Image (cartoon, rainbow, N blue to C red):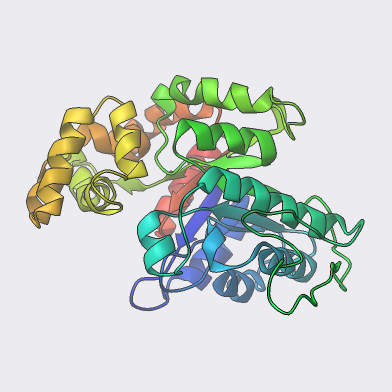
Length: 342
């Protein structure tokens, strides 16, 4: 199992620790660094800026949102980043959710699986550069069937460095996970439990066995983000993460459509998830956080004393995970994880 560092998206301002943490990640032997976007900082600009100071780390987006760019614009960014990094770029993609897609980007959310399939297909056409890029749609028709009627098929002026830039998909629901296994080179599970990885097995196998599937279990990347909090007091460590989980379970989505909420229900926390969501939507955010049980935090994070984390890592090392993405930029935590994993 390899390690990556997840920088994520910015809050009110750029994280001042990022350049130093990236340099330390390269020194420690981390595999990769990852940036994200939501509705503030974008994923590609920081990755290019900070990544230019590295020489070995893979540079990836975890993730770039489909609705932020047309498929060809994303393909242009991918081939540009891949050239500038000498073949170290990894394109991570995700659909986001209806509140962001429709509220921020002004795009329709329905048919996320069909949109993803079409989007990835166009990107692969651009990177292959075998012919002029066309797509019948219905989501991203090329050339556009309306307008002035003057559009014509094109292929990129710039020759891509690699036709096979890895594409990793963020997916939480069973159908999305199966799609990732079919058309992508890897999968970002946002909330992944190594102890319950069997919950994902059927969806992955379904995707791997579809006609034309790109990968098999043997060469498919699985890259969950894991927050590590080293603290002799397990409850104090859990307290530092309860508000984050409450936000995702209760507030990152509508009451009737919250993919993060659904993940915790599948993990066996249906009762707790309903309580957290109800409290959060009522504006009782502190109570929602207090309702997050420690076991729920421990499902997909590593918290507590160093020896506890060392022991729990054995389950992760034996799992399908290929790269563990460590959230944040605490240098002591990064060094400890490098010692325990690498």
